[in-house]
Length: 181
Image (cartoon, rainbow, N blue to C red; front, side, top):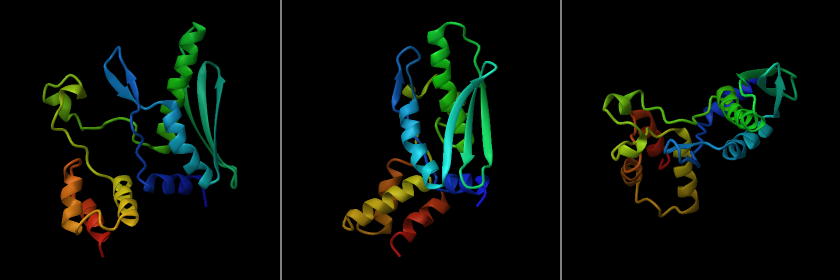
């Protein structure tokens, strides 16, 4: 199996990383490096991929190497800071973005410009926004049903419950309903 096939397997899992950090200055949330690594490293290890970082010519390079085929994929992020503390902060930031880019992980809310076009300045002003449900959330529903079969009365109940938190397209609704077949 090639490196890209292994990355595809990880992407098909529909992994989403929750924003667990708070930036008080900008009043925003972000994905911490620790949280990102807790999600990525087990998936990478399962596929026999190793993630490394190094600095070269004022760039942080993140490499994902397939330990079986020896193929590698890299992402680079420039480091412009001079102050050692700012360099360290930039490296942490760069690691998050390089990992997210290589694994094509959802680490930021993507609302397709809806929030900005409606005049909102940030997510704190939005009270009715619901993200679309993805394969990762459907898998969570499946695990919940396996642990507690009485959790939902039927497929309709599961869909209605999911709609409280998510927008659901036809494909994901079908995936939820298939959990009851």
